[in-house]
Image (cartoon, rainbow, N blue to C red; front, side):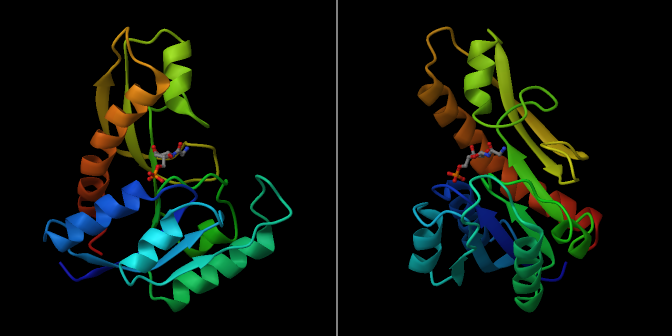
Length: 195
Ligand code: GAR
């Protein structure tokens, strides 16, 4: 398989980006991260990427709190194209990706979500799972379409919920699974697409 060029979009601490990088460095994932973009100037993901020498840039979405405006999506797509990205990985990116970004990377954008979709889409899915009294939740990696946490699933793994779980303890256990699953799902999907 040829070397895969990844672009990563995130809004948070970037632990999933770190897991992807670790998988690359240990030879489990045959890829490189060409560019990391974040809409959050305070998220650790940009600093984390820079600490590893990976080009990392803020995408300025202000003044919108949640909207990902069309012209900013166009700019984002252009940056990713210029960096030679073949697969875009959303890693805790909290804005809805639509056109023109989706059209620029058809079936080439993946997302990781902390639940067994279609259960608990949206934000803080681990809190939703506890509030619903569920006995298990999990992790899904899927291809992004224009919906919120919809799109064809690549892989899912369940995580049991203990009655003593707090949102934090559950999210921590979910993240351990995420960090293993995302690099594996990227490999599976890239092989399927012969990227
Ligand atoms: C992860 O748990 C990810 O699944 C979630 O945000 C967290 C980001 O953590 N994403 C979503 O909820 C998307 N709907 P990270 O910045 O440490 O990778």
